[in-house]
Structure formats: structure tokens, C-alpha cells
Image (cartoon, rainbow, N blue to C red):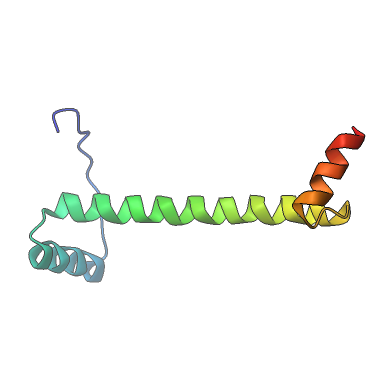
Length: 79
């Protein structure tokens, strides 16, 4: 990992203790635990954004009466 960027972060004591405990229990470095947590947070955020987009487009489809694939095919043929 020669291209890693070093950063200094501050954590409240309880989070620092949790992170250090997890690192010990999982046999990882503290850095790896923080990286895992950030990746998980990013996945969760992207999943939320995806669901929001899906909800938006599902609502638009319902407004046009597109409830099944056949409805979509019929709609596209009219265009």
C-alpha cells in the first residue's frame, strides 16, 4: 500500500476504544478497522441513494400507469 495517504483524525475516547478493541479482536491494524468502517458507511450511503432514485422513478412510472413490463413495452411502442 505504497500509495496510501496518511491522515490524522480525532476520535472521542469511546470510539477510539471500540476501534482498538475491534482491531485486537480481528487481528487487524487500527487503520484497517477505520478503512472498513468508511467503506461500510460509503456502501450504506450509496444504497440509500439508489433506493431514493428507485423510489423516484417508480413513482413516475406509476403516474404513467406503467405497472408491468407489458405496460412499459406498450408505452415505448407509442413513442
